[in-house]
Image 1: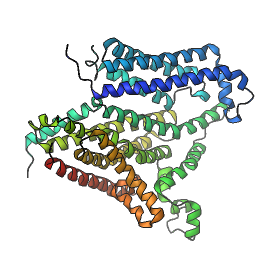
Image 2: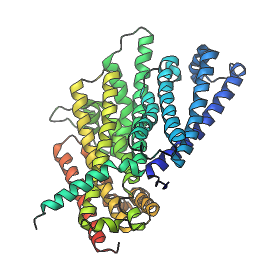
Image 3: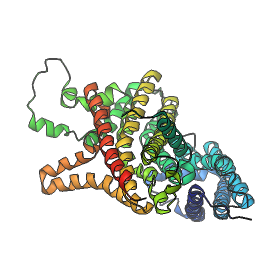
Image 4: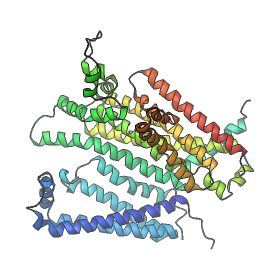
Length: 151
Length: 320
């Protein structure tokens, strides 16, 4: 079987995936640290961040754990699909990539309804920024790079 | 010399193919992401304080006063606009110009700074601030799209196969046109998204005013991209290595501005070095007077023409 030449865009997509995975995992670590210290920090929160801190406390444990889980899952899917793009694999690249994109879109929309406005909830331009990459991934994987992920 | 029909066909083919495959090549994808994220982040920075203010008013059960919101926007936007346009502050103006009655009955603020007043009072201030920041920032982003128009193909000797089928000039102009088409499409998506969002979420300005000013801003950005694209085309035609082409393009675009700003500290006339690129004229694309706007458009097209001709001259003579 002849080796397909990997297009530059697919390589770029893979690199961006891995970078976003890294920043996502850092975000997950930050969230974990925040949850662990939330109870102890209540008295030390500066005045201008108090509204956000109280909104975070009001959200409740299950919702926070759900968002934490979603962030972790999307980070892992980013890494796996990035590797899939580099190897031009159909399952690891296209399927996992599409799964990441769908979960990321759902996660952005969930954030719109689940998070208080003080925590970036509600539909804002931040939501659109968060949707740019997943939507681009969905479009590119199913049109431009459809035939390149066939191994 | 008349251009043959086969030349137009080749130009159309090459430019359409290049624009369509920009994302596939990687540079278009990176440019698309950076341009969208940068542009939307600028819009987020400008719009979120207004949204927060309106949300606070509503949560306190108060009717959102349009006049109050506009006043707050203008107050917050004025320093940004003045800095972008290089306008003196009111304190500096008061010290240098004696107060005198205006024969046209204009207010003191308008007399001192008609350009800022036009952008903030006569046009949707939110969009004006966003456009000014984008006019400043987009030239730094455009090199991600245009740095590899020829470098990679020359380095891999792949361009030779294309030269069997068409002329060098067609490849040069076709790829530039394709790159320009792609960047225009990205600007359209960006400005369209910002305008739709601002119009739907922040009901301060009329739909007509938002639409007209958005079209003007989009046209300004589309025209502004051309000379910087032309610089990148010239650099890509000269340098075989894509990464080197990107670095040199960035150094040229940013270096001219930095040299002018830093150089004027040591030697006043060094500030005119910014006119080596459209840095000195690009803000006039948003000027209140149409003569300035058309002059800025002509200047941008002139710059693009000069850089393209220099690049074309080099490309048709060099060894590929």
